[in-house]
Image (tube, rainbow, N blue to C red; front, side):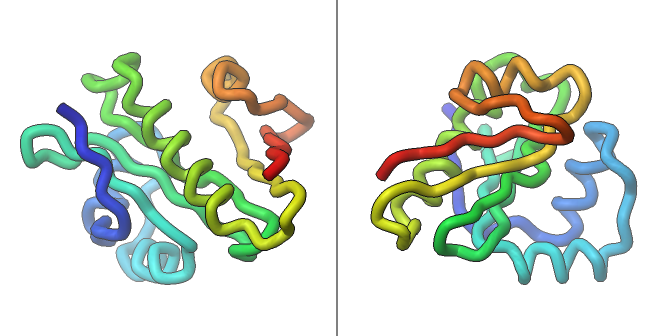
Length: 134
């Protein structure tokens, strides 16, 4: 069973998951600052092992951006990325203060656009977007 846990991601785990999935390596201090300045991060845990993560950044009111939606290669295509994205989208909807709509954006890795389209995102030049009526 996969458990999603908010705000436990360490800088070391953040860097490890990034590099394991092809993202550029970054210094721990950059990872620490990124985690501190984000709105929420979520960790996917299976049998006590960290196997995925996602972050949400933005203004915390009406504009939200998905960052580093990452699942270790051996756990991909099992619905874990979908769980992470849905968890972050739910957070944005619950915490939006517009009263009418909120916008969730992001940048999709090449070839991953279909994943986001299945979740209701629109592929736009240089990114993805989902407008949600609340």
